[in-house]
Image 1 (spheres, rainbow, N blue to C red):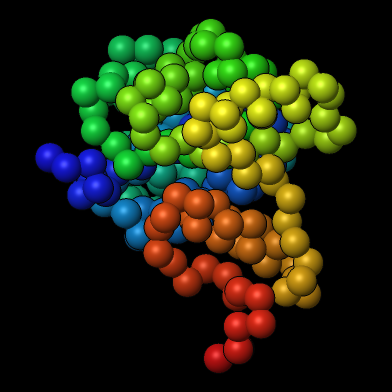
Image 2: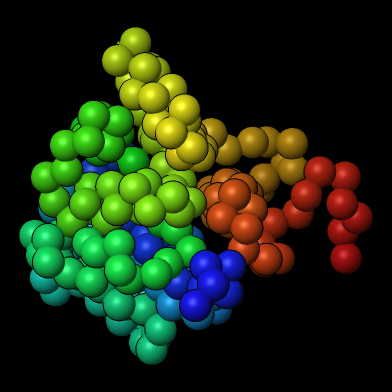
Length: 203
């Protein structure tokens, strides 16, 4: 199977603020690609409860639990299951997105020290030469954070900080989130019609 024909993405969610970005990406992505494989770190599950009021543990997460509907092309994994399919390079994927990406995860990836399935799946994505996108969400950032971003960028990782723009004059938080998720989808190379682009005429 040729890599460019693969229509399968891995989405990792870690314990930085901004889980709403991940939820919006997961809301739309199954309609745009063939398969979506999802893993939340334990810290991300905590943030999911703190920011969105969704209480669960990593072994009980499902698409229906998050969105109230089913998606046959979405598979969830427990972050402790380091023997899961997405931990192996033999599972062919288009790439992986970590959204949001905590500074702890950024450091683990920059130094090749995976400690759970999100890290392992990302490490595999890197070693196989596939597209890896990280969405760091932290401010201010230290020199260590910046160095870790630079290290990953030099390894071919796309660093897409969670910095929503205002040029489209958003009227709601939802519009801000959509505009940023549009940037993530663009970086993935996934076709969509999620947000309005600069000077694009309104329909």
